Image (cartoon, rainbow, N blue to C red; front, side, top):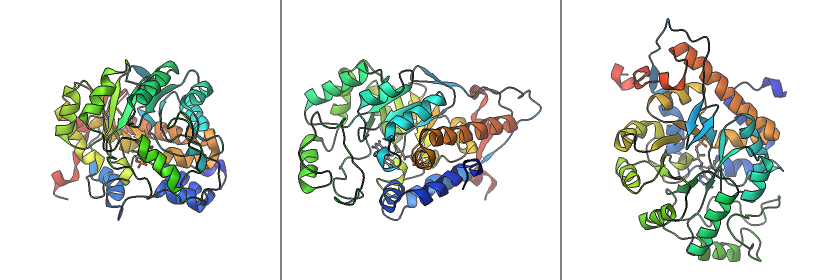
Length: 363
Ligand code: FNR
């Protein structure tokens, strides 16, 4: 397949499947249980239909948006995902360069294979946020918060939908990982055991706090000057509790169908959460975003921006930094076209009246 042949996110998925070794493809595509939620994330977007407005001047379209105080050229950013080294030797350094080339942001995972400082050095002008794990040792958390702030990360993302840590399931077995890995954002000093062994897992179990509670969120809120985003919210009540505790961003996510199977598609719960938040925090969404019309629908239903998980990894697997940029470019072009066809010349023109759920038509 030549580089030029790739014109959709689905093309990148196909290419990644062809290029990635089995252990990497299966880790990236893993879903929990039967994968109902993973499928539903994708299919649910199709259940919303667009009602375009015409005869408006849409000759110039502006896709830019402000997220957590940063100006992004597009309302599509990169979700935190682990182990970019499985997709490309340059790992997160390539991903952040691809995002920065498109003037958008990336959430660096704690499970990244480069340190948060290395990622910052790779893209000094990049927009970056840090997804931090909860640890038992609050001094360690404080050190990480300070490191993130010093390295120019402009928000802390806390993932709340993994109360019990997947220490043994879903990750490649020890010995099955033919690439060198390290996790410089998890430990101050790497444990003297091979990744994936029982001993290494025990070190993780000793370090990571599970499950985290609202008290841990409050502690983070009080111990950083950076805005805090809660990722993994599906309940309007949790969204309200987060806002009451001064959380700045509510990130609607079901972990791309990798945690609890059987939860709703993110786009289906978005309107309830937007209502509950009532403008007191920014609301984001991820899960199953694969086209520009998906982005438009999420924005119409109240998301300020969306995040992509697997599509960025597929871009990285296809072609490193350039592949990540191409994936974002495709979504940008598709969004811009969808905006033209729905009568929107700027993001604030994308209103709820553009979208109707198919059940309205009795379908
Ligand atoms: C993830 N996700 C994730 N989330 C998180 O908060 N911390 C993490 O370290 C990871 N790691 C991770 C690895 C891989 C391989 C995948 C596919 C996903 C979840 C991720 O942030 C996001 O919620 C989903 O990927 C979004 O769904 P799509 O875009 O993949 O459909």
